[in-house]
Length: 196
Length: 336
Image 1 (cartoon, rainbow over the protein chains, first blue to last red):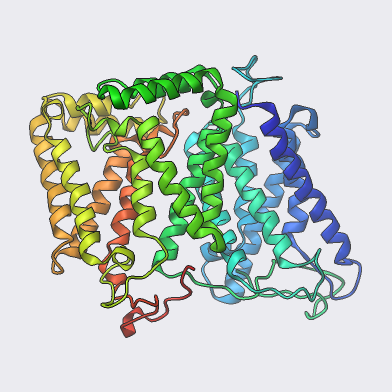
Image 2: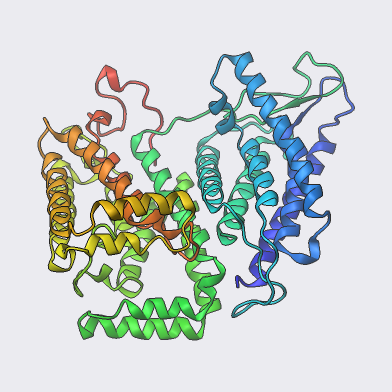
């Protein structure tokens, strides 16, 4: 089995992303007129906590069924926004999906919780604790992993080449948001592929 | 990446929901796009290396199996490496996986692209020897359908062809020619695809049931839709091993030679893409990723990337990476 400490590292990264997103929401002063809160900052605390709980047994919070409902609602909301944004800008819905990978990530989370197989017992060399659960419908797992990996690589390329202004402050800067998106995409790809 | 949404500048009510902004979207040129595709493959490779089965004795045993059939001077280091991995699998496999992860991120991050590509060449050559036994090419009996000459050496080839430097003088007729020049790039293409054609007609691959057995052997554990495809393909080539190997060799030869002639280059690249996809789906079952336990996607996607690097439509590219003809206008930023 994949060593527990590796899973713990990825879980810690997910919790850091969740905490950072909550801090960004607070820093954006959402109660203020004209304030804009990014959809990633709303989605990522949920995704971060859910993924941390999947990676590390001790961090599990809600039952799988609850996460199914949460991510079904989130995915439906994102789907609505993709269509609405495409109609408003005259662009194609697919372009909207790729420009905002958190929408794909939400769908991947929904798939993951719906496709989880029953937990196995025991582990392999280097294992500590219960074995990692596996996923049914592995084609979707690979497809999501490939798309998320592509989005993460694209984000990293854009991040390394773009020029940002820190007019909104460090915490609210686009680099932090894109960095969180990259961390989320890489971790999600990791989870999907090791659970096949 | 998205339209800019800045606090306080939108006419919204109490609060609003926006998508994150990127200051300036930079469209990569063809070479950078292929580098990013290579980074994606490395990233998937890294994640696959973290799979639970890689942390068992099975990983070391699979490495040891690649020594079979190789000359002693090549086989002994492989066996030594496999034994070492078997005894220290947790530490060593984590190093392997993390190295590949860093290579992927390094290629995607523009300031480190050269360092990462250079490191990937060294890493790929080492793994080709110690992890794949040179793809079994010296042991014999390998087939382009099953993954000859070994996926990992194709990573190194791509890294060389996509190196972020431009050879001066004449504009490059295709992306892969930008670094080494058109002649050297075509020679590499010829060597690769003609060697694949050679492997396709080796005695082991000409046997009546050779290709059938190779494909039908993949069905176990596959998703139903993929197993159905493989079943149909295996039935198609049953008892037709000789004919199938000749057809495959002919196609590979056409791909090899066609790229060297400007009039047929585009058709040859399209054929290469078709061959790569068919091999990946039918012959390699997506590298057995869907079954679990695969270490990499196998050669299919890498052959497709190579083909795209020889696509003539993305030339003529000037040494600075900018467009040379009006139809190539719109090319964006180049890699560093």
